Image (cartoon, rainbow, N blue to C red; front, side):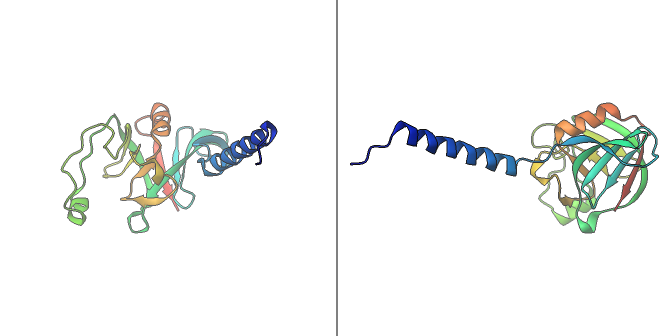
Length: 175
């Protein structure tokens, strides 16, 4: 009969712990936001969304920006151009657009603020459009091209951005 020694059991559990830590490190998402060098001369407070990178940049001026990971519009729903932040809302309600309801008649007419709301905890309304930069109740979508044209952020990131952005801030969406 073989009796495992305490040393062998300890080695086994240490190996198991190391493998678990490695798996967590590999599967954990990259930092939600970081300050980066952009090399551009955009003014302080300008928001730039680069859909090909799935990134949103909040310009700090002097060629620096805060980079956030985002979800962008699906290929058929992406848009590009310039607009501005026209409104800011904490805990927004969500009303699907007519075109969304036409594609999916089972969508509710309205979703009140809360954990089931796809806009998450904050929303920045863009110009005269139905597009928003907003939080999400589906954080697993961040880094993908899956929305109906809006820019989705992790809720903790949209709260950070919301506090920085002013009404009228320029927004640039590019490929």
